[in-house]
Image (cartoon, rainbow, N blue to C red; front, side, top):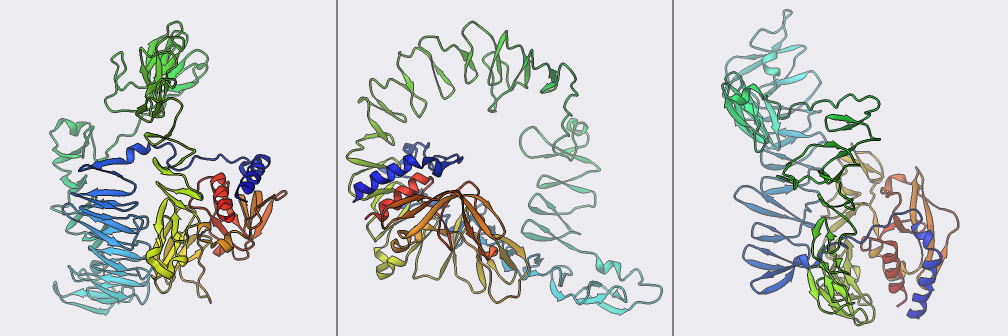
Length: 631
């Protein structure tokens, strides 16, 4: 049965290959060009794969996707590391994909705000800080004499702060009797005197990054709050300077520096870090093209420019960090910003070095020119010359056995082994790769989540309910919510009144969601609109292997999605049927439909659209589908 399905699938792929790909540019699998050997590390005599373990401090910690937060391991997909100069702390249950740090504590800036190193819950989408608390600037006032802030309800647009009281500046005056005592009185016909009104209206606080500061006595420079010593002080990087006696100098490298006005740099610099660039030259016939600051005739000359900038780079001629230069292509050759005299047969470039294809013993690999090479040598994937007739080069490792296949830096036998991310496993029936590990896709206790393999036996009877949330396993025994979009999938602790908008988890008191886009404001309605992109990997076999479609999104309208190159799949019967013309999927409630990528393939049926987060190409998805459903 399995062989029959494989032959049938191959036939359909050949016949309807154009249906699958159409005009899509199919990208290679993620990490396909990466050297798996780079992930092999050695720690105290123990070889490990950095994709499956990490060394933090003096200990090796085993686990997929781990990073270090100081000496502590954590998974950025489910936690956040916040650091200060001397400390580091991990906040669990909040992915780095959606978090921001407030000192050593992570928070979700969509629904929270950092006020004076304290995380506060937003009471409005436009919430600002008032000391350590959040307030709605449209409905409230932050009255903060000195360092004793008070939040008061704004009863009208005309109300202002009078220390810890409110007053209507159109009908009242705020009288300051002394530094601590104020009175609100009716406004006389002549207006408020000098000790009232305007003085009390002035704002005395501002925001510097995540901190609040007193604008009268402090300054915000960069992300630091520093004391304001005089009214003539201005910021210079993260420090201050007195513009009457000093200037802020910007060196070629490093942070700005405060210098006396007598310093030579003050004559050529200003508080603006970069001077306005010179305008391009005005060119006219026949010199119509620009090369740096010069004009040239493209019929007679060319522009020689550096393709990849490197610090302290020099040509073989000794010319360093050269600007774009005009040259004559009949007498000279340009190789990556370096101009050399054109010699017979020397019309090719290898990096910044000219050479000729007919020259014996030369081989260009990854922009490095190798000399004295044997005939028949080629470049390996790692850019190292080797002779395939004498051996097999697996990245940087040479094996004296020609004609072999590589698995990472080692050779392997494809008829007897399977290669997963540079790791070899004995081939067995129904064995497939999940990242760097191999597993039996018929084993109900194993689940692959975007390259990370999970053993479900520890979940007992709940294992069959476990789902993937990106590369993370969603535990059915926990109160968790997976929010997913075309770009990300993020796991959150479940909260009352919250919902998914793509991969974001929003407070419905603050936000409303439509078609994957958040908008400020709560809409009074019977139900909250949510939208998330479902994963085909979370479908049970009974759902996956029934009639389902796969196609490429051509366009999305208000009430429907247009798919092209559509195939109708039936995993139970092992049939593939091309759908003529286009297929239109109706979406009556546009707000509950997440944003899809035009040109990308998706699975779908009459109601929902599913993405395959485990596979990058149509062929991989179809192979998995038929392998799974033919068992």
